Length: 255
Image (cartoon, rainbow, N blue to C red; front, side):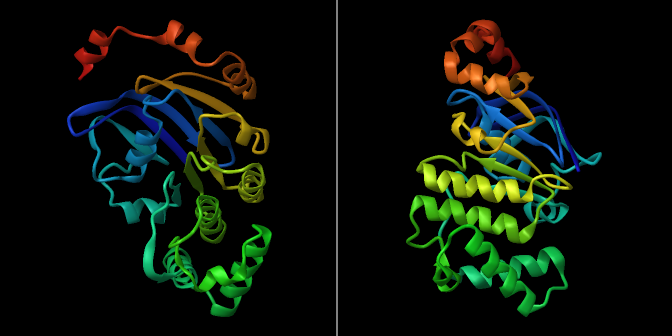
């Protein structure tokens, strides 16, 4: 799968957030997207997946050459896209097991209950999750770390071709972070790829990125290898502001 974001512009409640994002992502690769608060990282993930609160004002998002911006959210998911939320929502009344089985049935159509349960329990053991979670309502009463592990469990079960992970490392202690990274690395390679949106280098110490992108003021301003993340960790974003900053009136003209 090849995802091409071309000149993407988007706003929410009349506030322009994305100002011409250009980005190419491929299955088989792990990309990291970093940038200061307010640069548009989460907005980009939401627009790719079709969040209705955001209005696309320009550009396109192509998946293997097909513009997905007019597709419904479920159609994008059926293509093999997956979003791991920054703030996973609770779904009272729907158990983890029932939710995952129905999602897998839609994704793969022909699955056997016995095989599904065996794989689910195996993945839960791999992620060091209590088997009792199968019968709990999805994310209800879960800690932050448990919710993030649940996102990774969904990813392991649904096997997307490309996952957008919006600050999945946020709020995790080091043990939970290692478990989340273990899940990503289990899928890594072959037809799986991911865009890891993060503020910090620490998750990238466990999931080594092939490419690092820096976002600033609603656009991707530079890309490079893993060393780019190390530079940010050491020097912060001030050099990004100095090198790529634009006067506010320049951005206002684009709005």
